[in-house]
Length: 153
Image (cartoon, rainbow, N blue to C red; front, side, top):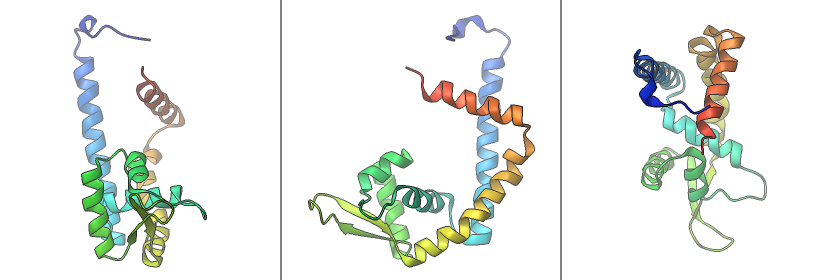
């Protein structure tokens, strides 16, 4: 259902947007603090490691370009993040063996151990600070809202 933005005069649009922004910032900050305190990972570290786990298969190379698309990050942002993670031994970048165009990204043994330890902490934090505070109906409504916005023409 498409709504005319001019038709609202009660301020709900602005209030809803501000509520979303406050909620997003607060929950992200709280989860990020938990990850940093308990695992020594930043939220971007976790996002990259989790995406690598999701994308990896035994016979698939993970390209920087594909990882950038998966995370919806600019190439420059991802490149800087990968550099920091590479220095800490969490990931490795190597030229693609298949065609020599671009770099592949892979988890190191340390990166794999780190994400395996961090994942239950991350999920617990999300549950404690977000999903566990909502009713099943509220969770369903949130999922539906995301679908509407993510699939708009």
